[in-house]
Length: 88
Image 1: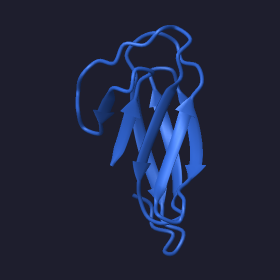
Image 2: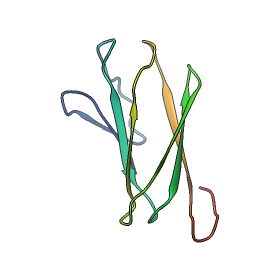
Image 3: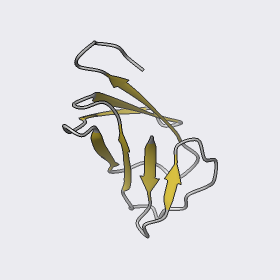
């Protein structure tokens, strides 16, 4: 499950559809849990961007979006299990 946290500590969980308002220069942190050492790819739409990170041994991961234009955005996450190569 992925979670987005704004600068005030408010959380938006995966699947929730509610607006998060940020100041122009605020960073966005997205975090979640998956398989141990999973390779996490993030796709940010409306302004196409990609990011990647690796989950730790417990499956925890996080990624910070440093800059994004104002507007509506959608984030999709893809994980590759290093043990099986399966992508989900």
